[in-house]
Amino acid sequence: MRRIRSRQRAEVSGAMTPLLSAYFGTERDKTLDEELSLLIDAFLEADSVQDSRRVGRLHEGRALTVTGASGAGKSRALERLFIKREEFLGYGSKESDCPLISVTAPSPCTLRLLGESILKAIGYPVTRKLDENVAWDLVHQNLPLRGIRFIHIDELQHVAQSRNKVEIGKVQDTLKALMQDKDWPVWLILSGLPSVATFLAKDPQVWRRTRHVVFRDLEMPGDGPMIRKLVEFYGKDKGGRTVEITEDADFIGRLHHAASGRFGVMVELIQDSVRQALHLRDTSLLVDHFVAVFAARTGCVREDNVFAVPTDWDLIDTSCIWDTDAPLLEKESQSGKAKAKGKQKGERK
Image (cartoon, rainbow, N blue to C red; front, side, top):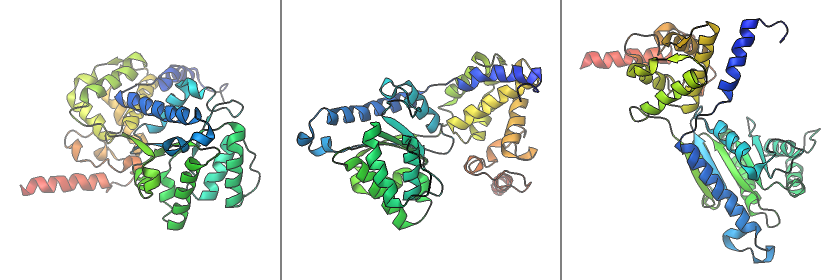
């Protein structure tokens, strides 16, 4: 594939690689780092005491939840920290001595499937369908063998989406059992949609062992200056384009609205727009690049394009765009209906 790719495409990819790997840190990264340090300290405090003297909070693992809307940037922030922390040296390699593994909760998520996912992350060869009890017996046997003390489960909301109260209860009990294991307690990092916190709150014993970091949506006008810096960071500092659109407060508002205030979505829109500029050999990052990217990412018609419409862009409903796989291909989309509804309200005034 590399051989048959045009020189222009190769040049664009070469310019995009450092841009895609660049990370724009915020205060919430600092908060997440501090909470992760507290979780690690809780483990070290318990591990420094002999088994017979472990009582109360020293006798059990703890949990940290990282929640926020889809596209808020949770997974990227966690992955960056896991790679950065010296305590997790070798993260991601099954051959390393890293005490942390990460899994994504399957969808739909049952206790058996979650157990098999953890076994695979540990490095245990799952060659056939395992019975639920067998899978979790193997999990408890292999965690000490691999020295795993921390388990990160992403997209944990997949458990609650099953709507099977029995299955949900079994997962809750199993997570609690991991933390309460007398011989090998485990510390959990649980990330996903806000419903993850609701899922854990149903079990008071799990809830009281848990601390929380919430990735909230950005808000205007308060976060306007940071959004400007974000565009300049990826467009100018990493993308090498001239960036003048940040001087336009209307554009900053449109970008915020297009991403529904979600930090991770905003980053992707900016990165993709820089790619569009590179592809067209434009030396400046322009609104037109965002128009094209938003259309391609959502499948919307021009009258529903936040960056294209001359006015009333704030009446376009973008709240569901990043929560669903269904593209906005129909002219009578939700955003169009919301726009029409907003105009009707204005006419009645």
